[in-house]
Amino acid sequence: MSDPIWTTFANLTKITEEADSLLATYSRTIVGHDFGRFTVDVDDEDTETIEDEGNWSCLYHVTNYRVYERTHRLASRGKLALAISFYRYEDDAGNAWPGAKRAKLYVGFAPVAKAWDTYSLFVNGAGDAPSAAYLGDGLWGNHGKDGSLASWFFCLALSSINSRTDLDELALTPASRLMNGASAKDAFQGIEAILAGPDHR
Image (cartoon, rainbow, N blue to C red; front, side, top):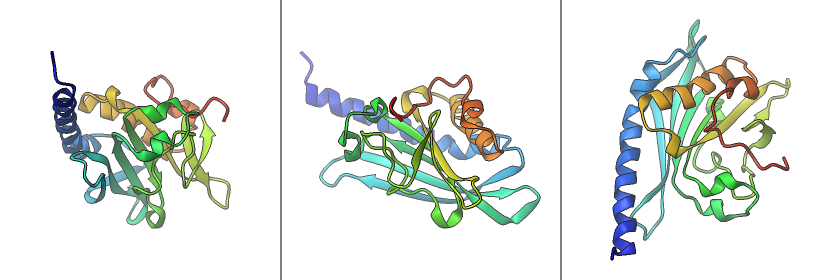
């Protein structure tokens, strides 16, 4: 008979090793992706990690990359964020959003001064995000004073990302579409791994 404690930690080790492999592919996958009128600088990144004190696991990791317009290399237009979330205590804050009980990859874009971080880039069990509203079609975000979409994020089931191709097609492709002005409906077309918000939103 297997020991459930041993099995849990064996699985945890395997999962974190796979997450490390995913993190290692970020830069190479971004470099190979066409972001339209934008370019993403993989040499200009910031990272944050949440670790649970007394726990031997890394729960959440976010990386931000600076984004430029191709024709204005010196003018940064924002930051592209990729965040792996295995588990956060906020996942248990409510039961309205089924996606809360899944490991996730968050993908977001925001102005440099308000880049997504460990305190803002997540959705709790009720389907609420601390710094964004649910806009429908699987997208959370905020509009600027001119009515345009100033910042946004979406999330995927982490289990759907098993290769660089998955990362490119399921995460970077819809992000690129959104950055270039597509609606969420058009950006997410054909991507079943996107986790939509609560049904009542």
